[in-house]
Structure formats: structure tokens, C-alpha cells
Amino acid sequence: MKRLSILICIVCVVFVSKAQTTEDTWKQHSRHELTLGFSDPLLQSFLYGVHWNWPSFLWQNDISIPENWFTKDCYADRYGMVPPITLSYRYRLAKWFWIGGSVSYYGVYHTYRDRFSNEVVARTNMNLINISPTLHFSWLNRKYVSLYSGLSGGYSYYFSKIYSTQEEKILPLAQSYWNFQVTAIGIKAGKKWFGFAEAGIGTQSFITAGFGYRFNEND
Amino acid sequence: MKKYIFVILTIILISGCTREERGQLTQRGHEICSAWNTAVDAILTDDVNPAFVLNAWIISDEAERYIIEDRYFPQYKIRQVDATTYGLYKGAEPYSTINTHGTHITDEGAVWTVTNHFGYSYAIFPIVEEDRTVSITNLGNDQWAIALDSAGFPQSVTHWTLSLERFTNHCSIFAENFTLSGDGAFAFPVDSYWEMQYGSTDEPVMQHYTLERPMQNDANDGNKLKWEDGKLSLTVSHSGYESVDVVMEVLAYFHYGITYRGVTEVWDRIGDTVYYE
Image (cartoon, rainbow over all chains, first blue to last red; front, side, top):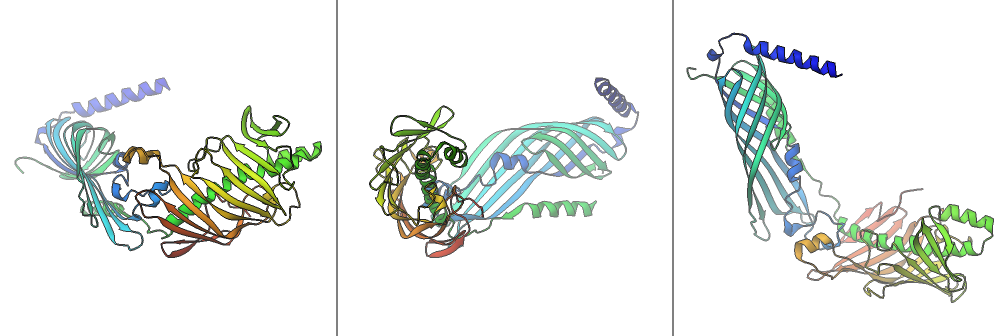
């Protein structure tokens, strides 16, 4: 097993170095990239929960607790979610090295209704915006396909509001914190227009896929 | 490429929207009745019935005792603590202690007391002292008064009369047709989360109830409570809130009509009632 692992590493190193050392005119290639990616919301859902924002004045989602027998009897009628959407820009400094930045958005929206009258009693929304500088390492470059890894770290701003239609309450909440994202492996395929998919871990997601556009200043 | 982009966008937009069911309107009433049933089931199953079974064990010969132990106390050992007191032990830990006061439970006027040392282990159970004590008094004519001794917490009380149709097996009450009548109150402790959110309070959530039509147990294999008739009316109250009235009518086995806020719906399960045929 150990020998096999060493062999695989050697093959990869040779393969990648061959890919990187191949003399080509990479500077004539597009040096700017714009991408729009859509990520799985698993981590965000885990962090914030699907019902993270049950309004406290409707606190009744666990009726096995005797106190909750007396609170307003509501149900979460509609749950809307915008999975993490990321807009990125990257500039190619070297054949294998890109720098750039990204902005992503994730939103969860709820509507709560009275179980008996079915009237809307509250609406809530939660919004999360991540802004991060990014580094990409393009370690395999072919004509139509490239493989890459990446790192990013930045700042997240989280804000939410609760609207109660009956009690006319608006309860805003805002906080901010650091974020990070490590892309273990990603693949891009295409020419000017291309598709991409990547896997990693971080505050954004595990899996991201989307499309992008390459261009040069002269285009 | 544009086609794939369109497909990706569509899938994401569709998967991002879900909707919860409105659910049954009486689900809170059902929960309230379930809490009541869980408490009643615990008292009858863990306190009252072991006393009747122990009575059978005491009057049996050695061979019959083995059968009773295997059937009704498979996880416990019976130990005589003193001349009138017996203990059910789980390992070296006493699960409950039963004082016969030197009588048989079938003797008219006999008073037995059952102290359950794990009486407070339920996540949701009326407030009683750490060791829950139930008194069983023989009223004659196969009737027994069941009283929850809540000296430390007087909010929780039971004024029940247990009436056996025919006490033929002289052992488990669940193997007989019996009725439970009376009234009482259960005081449910406030949740720690509530305390965390709104400040500590010792005032419990109260549940006052009356059995308008006696709850009737259908004779079964002897290990479980099996309601098949009866009508319960209860009111729950808590400081600062409007009290809530709930009615539960047992229409048949696995058919419970719950009336809450003027709406009646039928449920097929209540509290800890176990599914079996």
C-alpha cells in the first residue's frame, strides 16, 4: 500500500510537472475569468438550521414542552432558500497561479401562519454575504480542461429580520465573522465559456458548480 | 452550454423551496392528552400493577413464583426487605419498594404503598417527590383507591378508583377488564430552556382533569394498558396565559377523539400507548 501511494505521488508529480513545463504561449490565453457558481447549502443549513429563526414570540416548535401549549399555534408554511451563489473574478498572474475575489449570497425565508385561521402571522428572512479574496492554483492545464485547487478567506456579514403582521414587531439581527474556503480539487472545461465543478470545505459549501467566461483586455 | 446553465438554474430554484404541512388542528390538544396518558400509564404500569403482581407472587408456591417473575419481572429481582416490605431490584439498585403493611392487597381495607425510586426519571412527568409514592387502598368489591402521595409537591394529586370487573387471575390488572374513574391534577415542571429564556420560575404548568366517563382497559396479555372506552376532560393553565380546555374520548382501541379549540379530530395513538394486537 505504501509503495502504491508513493508510485501514485510520483506519477502525479511527473504528470503535473510535465503539464506545467510544456512550453506554450499561455500569456496569449485569456487572463481574466468571471464565474458564477451555485453551491450545496448543506453546511449553511447545518450552521443555521432550517428553522433557526423561529420567532421567539411564536416559540412553539416543540410542543412536548408544556410551556409551549400556551403560545401561538403556528406552522412554517413556506420555506424558501437561495443556496449559496458566488460571483468570482480571477486574474491569471502566472500559468498556474490566479488571484481574485468572490462575493457570495445565501438566503433563507420563512412564512408562518396561524394553524387555525391560516392567516400569516410572521415572516422572517436570513441573509448571509461572504466577501473573500481568492487564490487558485491551476496544476493541470490542457487546451479545454484544467484542474485546480484554491484557497480563500474573508469576511461574512449575516443579517436577518423578523416581521410580525399581528404584533407589528420587527426584530433585526446582524453579526459578522471570518470565513474560509478550501477547494481541494476543481475542474474547468470549455473555451471562452466554460463549466466548472469543485469540491472542498469551508463556510461556503462542500460542492460548487457553475459556469464562467474567459476574456482578455483586447477582447 | 446555455442549455446546461438553464437546467442547473432551474434545479436550484425548484429545490430551494419547500413547504410544511399545516398538520392536524388538534395536535396541541393531542400533545396535552398524551402527557396526561403518559403520566397515568407510568403510575399504573410502574407502581400499581407491580403491587398486584407482587401480591400474587407472595401467595404463590415456588414453582408459580418463577413463572410470575419470568413473565412480569424479567428484569428485576424480588427481595424481601423486612417483614412487610418487598423490593424490586435492578442489579443492586432498588427500583421500587412495596410495603404491604402485613396484608394482602385483596383484603378489604388493606393499604399498600409503592415507592418508585425512579419516579422522576421521565423527561415529562408531573412533579412529585424524588421517590414517587402511590397508595393503594382496597375499598371492597374489587375496587381500589389510588392516591399519588405528593406531600412535597401538593399540586400533583390523584383521586382514582380502580374497579376490576372480575379479578380472576389475581395477578396483573392489565389482564382484566377494569375501569379507572375520578379526577386529579398533574403539575408539570417548567423546562430548563424556558428558564434559560425567561428567567427561572418554579411555577409548574397545571393540568386539572376529570374522567367524565371511566377509562376502560380491555383485558390483554397482562403487560400493557389498553384503553378502549372513556372520556377525559382537562384544563391546562399557566401563569400569564389563558387556560386551555381539551377533551379526549376513547372511541375504540386506537381511536381517540381529541377536541381542542372547538375542533374534534380522531387520532390513532396517544402518549406512550404501544402498538400491538
